[in-house]
Image (cartoon, rainbow, N blue to C red):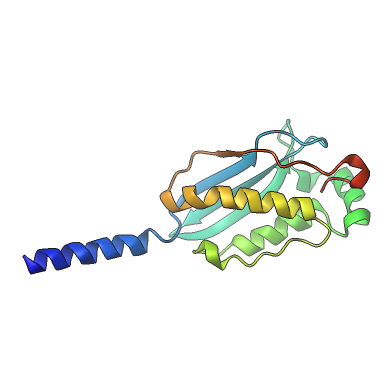
Length: 155
């Protein structure tokens, strides 16, 4: 009887440890609507063997084009913000790749890209539970209010 109880406790403890990390799969979270500049931010993360192996934080327009590849957008953003969508995409990809625990994320906001940082954080938080449970269905996140056009490009 004691052996059976000990075995059950050990199995339960092992399941708790396994459940602390990420489940393998590709996870996506995106905002509900396109912003005033025609983009909707999206975060897509791939997990293999419990570790994030790829991450893409980018805006997508209605035709599927990526904000990080929009040179006109980048050309307007660089002088105002000191960065561009490709740099923001790379920063967050680098911060996520290799993580096996959400508590280990060390990503401050990108200087000059306050809205992007807010969007990244909202999408990252929305993926925490699905990544732990292995739920790969896309997550739609309620929109965050934008800056008005007078305040800048809207990063």
